[in-house]
Structure formats: structure tokens, C-alpha cells
Length: 179
Image 1: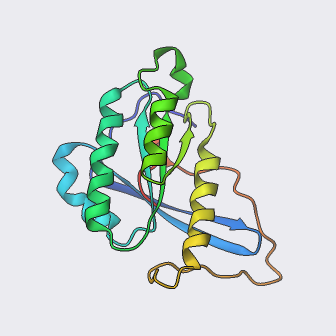
Image 2: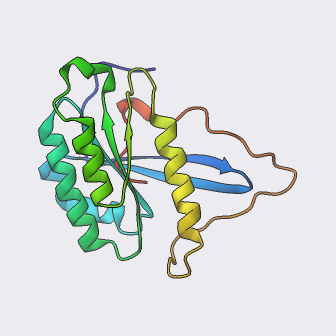
């Protein structure tokens, strides 16, 4: 259930999510790191062995779009292995208040070899697509012999693949930043 009364993430929050794509099972260990500057020094311990990063900004707040650019630079400096990157414009339910254009954000995503999505936690739109893309990208990464810290397994034949139908986001009800 969506809550209008949320507080910002303090430090980090965590959840897991399993996704099956064809015969491959992906277990996402998702860390939602605090975006505030005062928590910035804690972030490296959460993204150190990351295989993907969801860079989420609020389409009504240009400063949040600017902030993801510094996060990208930090990830590029500190994460040695290739990453699946997704830029996500959140709060599309507030389209009439949009301050960051879709084209600008899409072009930025392309410039850093990221996929681009828009979502709304309020209306539960676009979120599943982000996680499915992230999981598919990790399947592709797993085929790269240089990637060492990514495990992808084939489920037992008696376990039918299940489709992701909802993302458990916990009390914050917003897409997480890293997975």
C-alpha cells in the first residue's frame, strides 16, 4: 500500500526479490541507499559488489536529476566490474509538475549506456519493467567471463518459472537505488 507519509531513507534499507526469466532465476538483493549528502560516505559499502544500479530521480525536482550524475561518476570510480545501469524518472503521476524532460533524461541515460524508464510508485506503473530489465541485463553480464561476483543459476525442472508481479518496497514505497 502506498503511503503519502514517508520519511527519507536513513543509511540504507534492504530487501530481496526473485525473478525468473525463461530458465534463469535472478535473486536481486536490493539496497536503497540514502541520497542525502550526510550519508554519502556510507554508500560505498553498499554498492561495492553491485552488479546493477538504479539511478532514481524525481521528475519534478531537477536537483535529484543532477544528483544522479554525481552518483554515476562515483560508481564509475569505485565499482570495478561492469554494471547494469537504469536511469528511472519517478513520480510520473505528477506529470503536470514535471521539471525534468523525458528527452533530456533519456539522452543522459544513453550517454552512460543505461536503460531509461519512467515510473510512479503511487500508481504502480513502470516499476516491474525496471526490475525485469535489470534482471535481463544481469543474465547478459553473467555470460561475460570477466564478471566474477555474479551468480546466475538454472532452477530445478520441477520448479516452474514465476513472473514477477509486484515489488516489495517496504515502508518507503519508492524504487530502490541499487540492486
